[in-house]
Image (cartoon, rainbow, N blue to C red; front, side):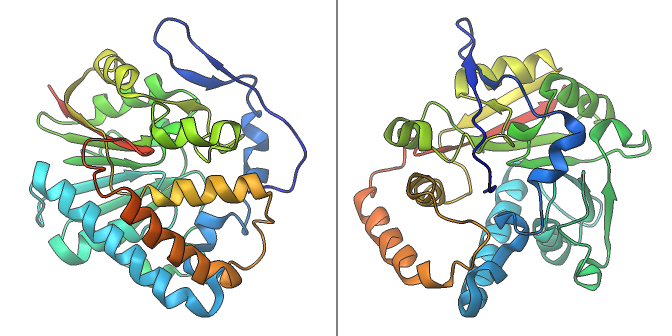
Length: 285
């Protein structure tokens, strides 16, 4: 999703099989890769006249995520939800509206909400890094929806969050699964690589010890997450085609929907298979 011919290299640890970008883009250059035409920041408007359909899909995803959280940690007006890497803070808005939670969002740029501040009234939004969070923040729930793979120091980040947590705080992390069918299918074109924004690629066998080392008690690692795995397949296919990500996706909408229906039919038995996304749930001891 960046107009560049630059090539990047991933390496893999022979011990734990963790995959990591090496070398990485210097931190001070990162914002060049998170521009206004970065598709996740553009959101539904990237789809032109079909924006309302995409917006409705996003609302369903946000509500689904809120319900997943509520199932492992009941949400109410006394609950504080901290979303790391909140981007467009639509998930926090869903928590606020559905469960009346106190909602806090953190991102290293305000691009996701700067143009629509009124939409996110009642949500505390901050620009910065995890290490900048005040000790006064004592979240009941911490979420990371496709953030940890972007982090430059995941162990340090998870350890810092553990220090902010209170007994019983729940941590929910969703990331691409390197040990998945979509990665094996698309190889170097797999959207999970997402170079150079993704710096670490996790699998179930290495995210568990990472969480444990940071002081978290792992509850479970699910082979499927909340994000539709078809999106990884679609983005991977688009990467292979070499599309211009800054243009409108409007003309691709009908084909996108048709192929999604085909994908669903072909993967009816996906319950115990990882097609590209995994979810980790942990508690503060």
